[in-house]
Length: 202
Image (cartoon, rainbow, N blue to C red; front, side, top):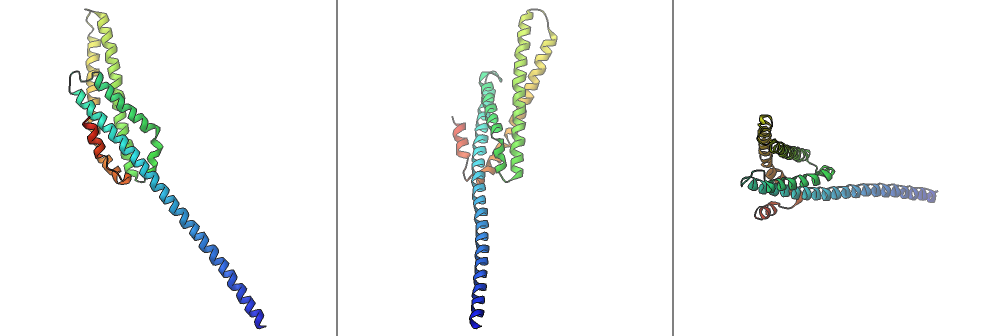
């Protein structure tokens, strides 16, 4: 009788040991999965912060040089327009990788980046459109020769004003770039200031 009681107690202890082992294994697996997800998300966030930090720094450098070219000679000469086209290419890179933005946990930072890119991209397109239209009107004025075309002359002047306003709007928006880049630095574990200084001194 005593042996049966002992065997039952031993079996019950073994069952509890199995249950406890299963619970600990499940908990360990859950903790390991959560840790793995945390590490992976942290890695992806750092990579996203590096990508957007470098992209926005490059965009800032390009627009800095565009502004320098704008202040010399023809404000919208070939150098200025090439710089603005280079800025547009950086925005195209952003558009192709926009889903990476969701790897940044800070919703406010994501919104600021997206909003700024839109506010820079739209007036850049406006500058290109206005420039193309000005050239078309000027071609028509040359074809007209000595015949007065006040409608075309007025159109050219209006387009120039629109282009100037669009350009000024771009440069106003650029002033928000340093703050956003600064907020990306702790997430990227890297400073982008050196890159910016090197780019401006080229």
